Structure formats: structure tokens, C-alpha cells
Length: 342
Image (spheres, one colour):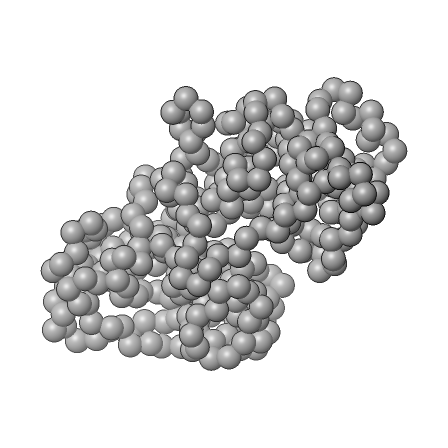
């Protein structure tokens, strides 16, 4: 698992986390048949009964595993990450909120260990991910409806399978839905080393798009730059470099971006807007700085930019791209390009 250090600080909590799921790369036990009349098993899960600070409201509990019905699937979780949306959901400030009490976690990959008599699309041994948000993946085992799961290839890296449901699909939607970009066009984004940012880099490269990737300065900036460029990034710059007047010379070598992707807000989003081509679009899908998006009045008066919010899914619906679910990015011509894990 990948644990958010800003949430789980106490040593006792850390020990609970380490014992929750198998280590990355571990597979579940050998698949077996299951009878609905078998004695209920008990499993461990991270549960919250009310919204608030995750470090205070989430508890490790033993739960009774439901019997497998005819259309149900019993799974063993192999890996489950912590996504910022998971934290927002626990805090109660996310667009989709499950009924309480709830098990945390929106993403993860599990192995099928038993199926009901009416299940036709899955079999023991298959790998699956949630079909929708709010399923609750922070548990050792679970029984879900077949409709709540989507099969994924079992020969891809475990970490990639566990994180493919949110970030790559978000990146694909933003690149495809807001501007009609053509090969050679450029895209600028901040937080480029995030999960979404790395997916943007890879999908954009597959589409023939050029990316300008903004990151925070750090001692190992060259190492980070090299890693992002190995994924397909054309340019990697720091927030400080983005603010310099010399940026105007930057676009003598490449076209001004028609699309900006912002998940930081504050001054960073203002600087992204300044670099957009006239009539370009900035899509905001996060607010890591916890500061408002500030747009220049000049941009509005001149009609230089369009601001778009990243859409929040409606209850019970996640805007999946079927093509993303097999960890493939479709590009013109019918070719598919595999995505590397974040």
C-alpha cells in the first residue's frame, strides 16, 4: 500500500496499516470454490462512522464477511492506495459521499477467490478493480456484486493495476474533452509529478502533444526532470522559472499552449493562465495550495482564456473511459499505448 504520511502519523496507526493488506507484489491465496452456506469469515477494514480528520475518525475494525450470493463475488484485496479524493471523502467535502459507517478507499486491485452461481463474467483468480467510487477498498477481503467490479489484466504491475481507475482516466478526459488538440499542439500543467500529471505526460506523448510541465523546486530537481522526460515530457520547469519574464522567449521554440491543467490553484494557476494562447482553456481539477484560482481581469476583457472546472461525478457514476480500464490509451489510427505506473 501507499500511505499518506500527512494523515497517518502515529506509530500505532502505522502498525495497523502495515498489517492491513499484503505487501506490494504479494498475491492472494489459491482460489477456491465457496458455498453460500459456509460460516461467515471475519476480515479487517478501515472504517469511519462520521466525517472529520481521517487520523481521528478512521478505525481499524474486524467485520463479518457477508455470505456469497448468486450474483456476488468474494475478493481478496491485493493493494489499495490512498488518493486525495479518499481523504476528501472521509472529511465530508467530496462530491460523492457513501452512507455511514463506510469503509475507506476508492481505488485498489483485488483477486477473485470465489463467485456465486449466477456470475458469468468473472472466475477465481481474476484481478478486478472497482467500477464506481465509494466501494471501500481499505479492507482485507470483501463480497461485492459482480456489477460493482471490472476485470483488469493480471499480468500488469500490481501498483499500476491498483491506481489505474482514477488518475489515468482523469488525464485522458482532460486532454480529450476541453480542446480539440492536434499533434504538435502544446499543453501546460502544474503538479506534473503527481499521479495525474505523469499520466498526462504519457498520454500526451502518445497523442503527439508537447507538454510543459511545472513542478516545485527541490534539491534533486534534475533527477525529477530526467524521470519526467523519460515518460515523454518535453520541458520541465519550476514554479519560479514560470514567473520569470524570460518565459516570453520560451514560446519561440514551441507554440503557446491551448490547454492548461491546474490542480494547485493560487499563484500557480494565475501563471498558467498567463501562458495560455488566446482563447485557450484552463481546466482546474484540484486545489493543493488551498487557495482560490485568480484570473487576470485583462484575460477576461480580451477574451483570452476560458476557465473550466473538472466535473464532479454524479452520485453512482464515475466517468470511466472503457479504453482506460485495460490500461491502454487509444490514439488516432487505432493504436494503443500502454501507460507506466506512477
